[in-house]
Image (cartoon, rainbow, N blue to C red; front, top):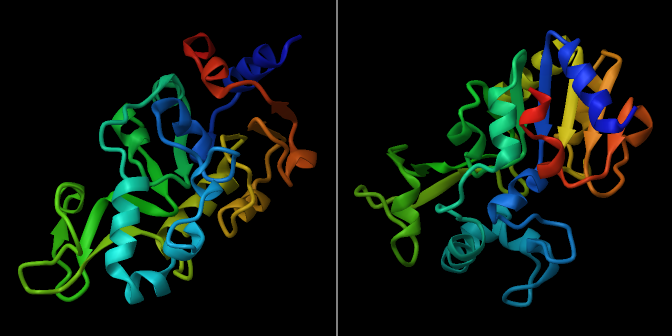
Amino acid sequence: MEKKELLKNMINSSEYIVFMTGAGISVPSGIPDFRSASGLYSETIYNVSPETILSHTYFMRYPEKFYDYYRNKMLYLDAEPNIAHQTIAKMKNVKAVITQNIDGLHQKAGSPVVIELHGSVHRNYCMKCGKFYPVETIAYNEGVPKCECGGIIKPGVVLYEELLDEKAISDAIYHIRNADLLIVVGTSLLVNPAASLIYYFKGENLVIINKSPTPYDDYAKLIIRDNLETVLTDDLL
């Protein structure tokens, strides 16, 4: 039996499905991933690494340079959900989508329960008064975005050196613990603590859909290396 048929059988026999997604699921939507040869981390800007630019220290020290990079490399407001996002949104018995992505495409596709471990570009807040600002405030202006109170508007994404949201982590753990099928899509599973959440899965069916090997492959019941947009299609429904 081919792997896609095995996946379909697992889906049909499961009552509590949880997806965990990474940057790879949004590549077909035109958003580059991070660690591939053509990913965001393959080039340096200002003679420093993207990981450094996307750190809390760099944001606080060089906000102008941070926002120049952020606008050019992290905002893809014209991106639309692809077939993989849409298939997940239409699939029965999916109780939650846990994502490392900040693009909001799972919600745009219609998934009702999305846990964003690393925040979202669509939520931005004044560091002084806490006022909310939409992503357009940052995307369509220049320089460091400022609130009407004078404070700097900070993206609602988790930067390097910052802690993940405690509620997002606890919600993710809850769903993974209760899942009888965990499907990991488009992530290298190299970034913790997100990747280590897999250890909370107690079910038998762990599926990993990713082009390259991951540190958790030995735990998987099924590994699929094909392009995810040819795997997560309507014929799984």
